[in-house]
Structures are given as C-alpha cells and as structure tokens.
Image (tube, rainbow, N blue to C red; front, side):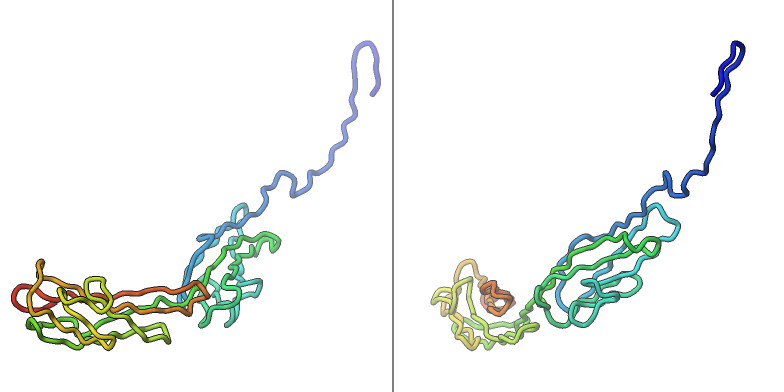
Length: 216
C-alpha cells in the first residue's frame, strides 16, 4: 500500500473458494428407529438422504450388506425379513448407508422375538343340557408345548355351580342352571420356553349356557 496527498491504493489478491466451503453435510435418517418383530416376519424401513442429489442408500444388517440367514436379510428397498430363529443376542442393527457419502449412515434397532403363541378351541358352538357333558379340544400353534389348563369362569377345573372340566377338556354342566345363565370355558396355554422370561399364558374362551340349554 502506498500513500500520497491525493489518493490511496490497496493491492488485493484473489483466489478461488474451496468447492466444499459452505456446502451442507450429507445426512441420513431412518424410519422406524426401533421395532419389535417376531421371527419370520417382515418390516419396511425407509431412509431419507439430505443435502445430496444422490438419495440412494445401501442396506446392512449388523454390518453385513443385505444381511444373512442368522440375523435376517434386507433388500434394496429396505424390506427387512427376520430370521427363522431368534439370534443371540436377540437384537440386530439395520443400517442405511448413503451412496453419496459412505461415511454417513443411520441405524435402527430390531428386537426379535419368538412367534406369538395362539390357542383355538373346538367346537366353536355347542349346546349342552344341564348335567350333560361336552368334550373340548384345544389347538396351539407356534409352540412345542401343547399342554393347556382348563378353566370355567376363571376357576381351574370349574366348580359345582358353573360346571366342571377335566384336564383332558371334558366339561360337565351343573344340574341347576346358574344365574346369570352364562359360563365361560377357557383354555390356557403355558409357554415357559421364551428366553427365560418365565411363564406366558395365552387364552381362548367359549361361552356356554344360555337359557334352558347350554350353547355358545
């Protein structure tokens, strides 16, 4: 810079700004961020890539692109399929990795559980005379423990007032119709083998006894 009485001069130097200066950072978001899923079921994940024209992502399960049979698989659209057996530990991580910047990703936690035990009772509709009997059968799915406990109005084995039921499901109606003239037969399935969390009960009920006859 030089000085005189009438003017002042400044020397300026120009340089190009770095291309990335002021550019927003690529980021990834995933939905849902956590979920609980039974084995063999599916869950759809969605990834959103921000600050990039390339919105593509790659999908991983526990760091494995596409997953595997142990931890579950995920396709190019983000559809996750749980494995056929619960892994150990029973949690897996689903990750969406940005194709624009592989250092940017988002993850979700999946909690995998055994399938829900279901119980059904047959017959679905029945009429029983007072003092008569009826054989019930319980069918269980998604468990190897097929034992059930039979109840009448919430009482294991029933009672003389509401009727009794044997461990094999034979219900015997009382000789006098109770008031109200409805009783509920329940099959309770015990499924103790679920990750050491104790005993879980699954119920299915049938109503009996309406008016002078026993029916659903």
